[in-house]
Image (cartoon, rainbow, N blue to C red; front, side, top):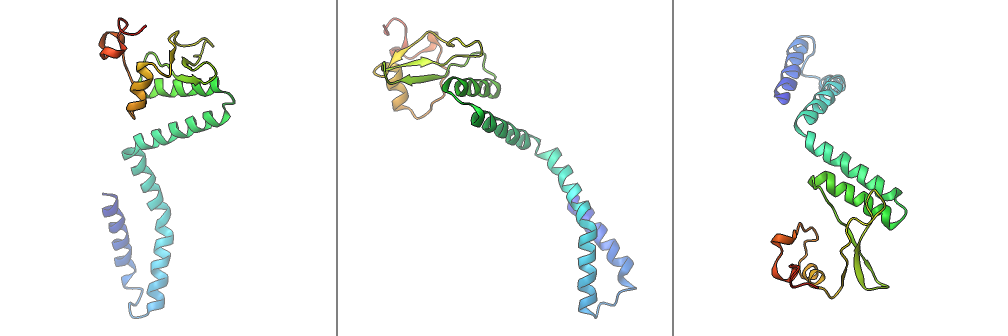
Length: 162
């Protein structure tokens, strides 16, 4: 539709100037085309922006969200702040009610939940690197999991895990 409108404007301008501009002089025709392109470029750019705004709204919002997240990560100075930024991003993107980000403590050989907005760990659950949960994530490449206790596979049930 935009291309059709643009072609209509160029064609009508060509018909208007056809009688006053001889087509046998290549320099005049080239200058004329250059002048038309210079005059119509702002209109084309404005139409392109309008079309992009209407049809690519989701991509623009995603790009802005990604840029905000990148900026927040670059200003985070410690692990707890990085965990908080990451948790907020995951919660807003996936609309999850609870998000737990676990990190590995190599000194004590266990994973623990990073603190949330209230500066307390989001979960009291800790597990070692030899636990079935850690082995499960070592085997599977997907790092996102929404495992809930009633629907856990057998190695993760409370009865089987001490």
